[in-house]
Each structure stands twice: as C-alpha cells, then as structure tokens.
Image (tube, rainbow, N blue to C red; front, side):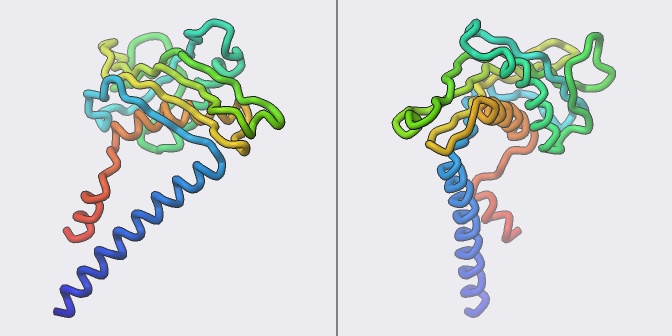
Length: 197
C-alpha cells in the first residue's frame, strides 16, 4: 500500500513539475512579449540524425522594401547562431558552393510578412509586431525539399523590444522547426510514462 501511495505521489509531483515548467515558460513569454511561432506546412520527412552539417542560405525579401534590408541580411547569421545553440549538428554555417562532402541540410527562404514594432506610447494600444519567414529545408546533395514551415517572431506587449529582437525571434523559430524534427519533444503523457520505465 505504501508503494502505491509513493507511486501516486511521484506521478503527482512529476505532473506538477511539468506544468510548472510550462507555466514559467508561458509566463516569461507573456511578461516579455517575445514569442516564437512555427506553422508547419510540410513536416520534415527525413531522419535528421543522419545529417552532419547544416548550411544556411542568404534569406530574401518576398515583400520588397517593406522589411529593412539590414534585418533580411542579418537573419542568416542569427539563424546560424540559433541552430548552433541547439547543439544537434556538428557543423552549422553559411551555404557554400559545390557539392556536399557529407550529409548536409540546406536551409533558406523568404521573409513573407513584416509588421514593424511601434514606438512610444502607441505600444500600449498597438497589436502584434510580426516577422514571418517562409523557410524551406532541403537535402543539399539531392536538392529535394524535405520540409517547409512559416517561422514567425512576434512581439506582443508594451515591453516587447525592437526590430532586431523581432528578427531574432523569427530566427529562433527557424531553429525550432529544425530542432523539433531532429529530436521531437515528447508530449506530457510520454514524459510521465518515461519516468516509470
């Protein structure tokens, strides 16, 4: 009987900790107003654990001069940094010419939506700021597209930040799309079951 009570208590504690972690993350996003958002168009179909290298192409603007060039130009470097932070691939860098010597992912795309953060008192009443990227993931060796998503950065409160923060959150969403395909985050029930295996 005591063992059953301990098991029930451990399960309750695990659920509480998982809920607390999620609540803390959500609370932090709400407090800072900085959010990542990935809308998967085509889930990544390949096993990304087989890839040793990620190369990131220069992103383009699909909306002309509406998005500042500096943000479009800076997106590649920021995406490289965010993918490296994940630590899932031995090599991450800018795209190079020529054939790949090892299994390589090629990441690129275009900025498809941009809503500039407002300044001053208008922040209190304005809606979201947005930086949206149509991102494509391809196998560099074959050229085949293996996944596509809309990766967004959002700033949604008066504490939100500036244009660079908005672009950084979009780059984080690009990395999130790739990272989640490489190592999917288990759902809540899978995490609880794993504690008892």
